[in-house]
Image 1: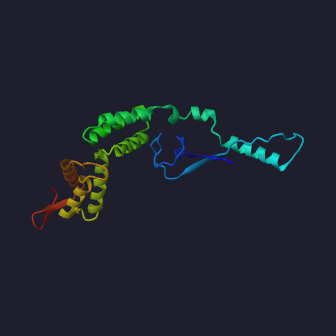
Image 2: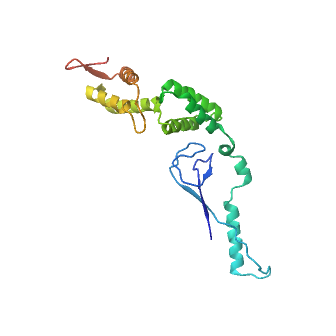
Image 3: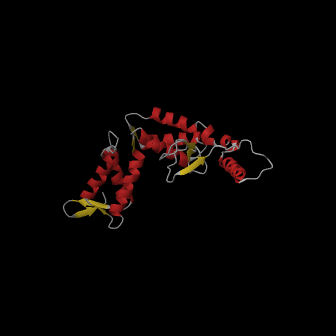
Length: 218
């Protein structure tokens, strides 16, 4: 018996189906951490079977037909699925590509795009940010906001215990975000990264090396 296999988005508000496995849902942008497979079997129709005859074959046909009906997607569910009807994600993707220049998306632009995505996706900020980040990654665009988040996490790891940032750790932090990442032609603007580190140290009372032996909050 031939069977058709479909993959279904694990996001409960989406549940779109596609004929291949993907890392991210092409409709809602949610990362697929598990594979949800739907196996659809064709309906088996018994030929020339007497209605009055009861046989194992008749029962098998009935069971198979029942299973197929249970696995089929109701028409109402398809029509009510916003991922299949709403062209918001497509419109958002096009707007992102048109808004980026020099393969760099600074934090201000990210915020503007996020607000636009929220408006075309019915106020779903989480979904808008997921699609925005995924699209920037697909276009090999530097995501300054994401790099700043990474830089902040790294600085916390370096300084949360001793409240000091030595020169080596500072250089390591800068290089981690200013060097181009895989697929990108550039990294974060070094001036932006330097300013972020200085502001981070001031806001978190982190001392930096001053002179040969001294430490102070710059």
